Amino acid sequence: MPVAGAVDRVCLEAVELAHAAAVARAGVLGVGEHQGVVAEDLRVATHLFACPHPGYPGWSWQVTVARASRARVVTVSEVTLLPGPQSLLAPRWVPWAERVGPGDLSPGVLMPTPDNDPRVEPGFVVTEVPPNTDPAEWAATRAVVAELGLGRERVLSPHGRDDAAERWIAGPGGPDNPMTAQAPALCETCAYFVTLAAPMGRVFGVCSNEYTPSDAHVVSRDHGCGAHSDVTEPSRSESAAPPMWDTVTVDFGLF
Image (cartoon, rainbow, N blue to C red; front, side, top):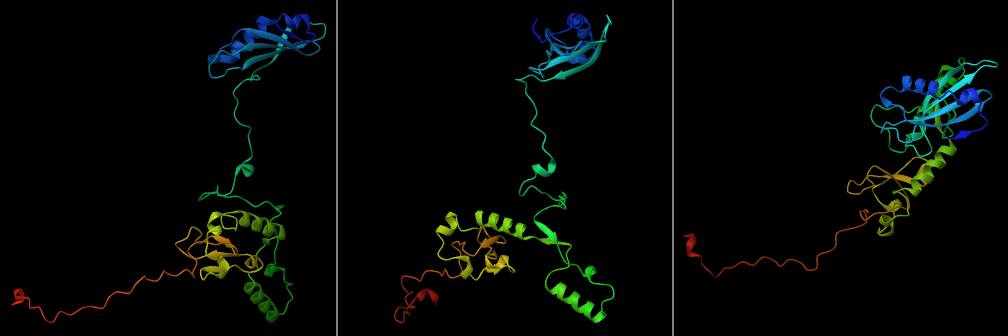
């Protein structure tokens, strides 16, 4: 019987007590042979028993027993089923916020934006205008806020903007892909290219050509595809011959 560390003799001999405790806890999982004992502390030891259940290969019942100072009786402290080095384990649990990846959100799923998210920063809302502001000035301020697209509690921060730009450039709507390499011209000269508002509009726009894979997607100005608006149909190799009128032959079948 393997023994690890200096084990108290009384705790070492409490195999039957530990086995009975494991059987009471195991139920249908069963308890196998004694695999050894490990010293946990002074007069504290853990007995190991194999788990014969086919669903728990490599797992073992671990029964911790202890003996009080100057006492002759050993008591059971804990009974647990723990995996061994070769046991099949479930993957490490990862919080939901860390598991969600691009495109994982489905209808009805909510993903809160943390307060410390570096992608956003506080915006300007009309409620920040002092309450004693002149009504005309307040109305003008509100009009300007609406015109500039403000009025949001949080807006995209420079970090969030740069992060999105890098992701879009590296994606299928950027310049480094086979579609752009074989395009006759770039998106910035295409009639279907709808420019975004500044500052993202200096680099990106949205494709509005329904026949391209990029339709309704963000594309960079130096992206391209084969459906550029300047691509015209090839001219015909030869013109059709004018119609010929037969004024000599008579078709008697018509009379």
